[in-house]
Length: 70
Image (cartoon, rainbow, N blue to C red; front, side):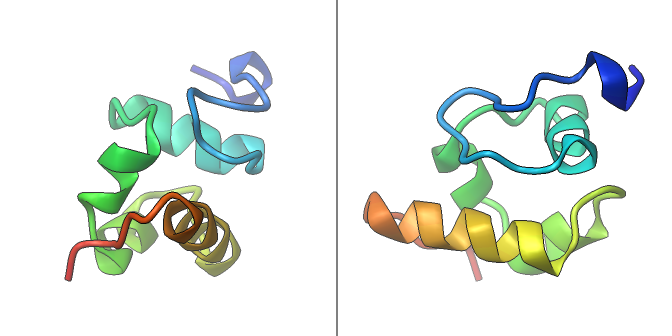
């Protein structure tokens, strides 16, 4: 899947860059709950997800009362 085929927003995830969305889709992750079940290290290990995307995801999760796994 090329990044040009990736939607700008996936599921209930906040808007992220296409590379981050592509990485999450390839891992089968389409919800904040699924993201929160991962840890920062697991997210950062995905090609296409950087510190900025993790900060955006953490903030969105916190707004919904979700916390990232340790």
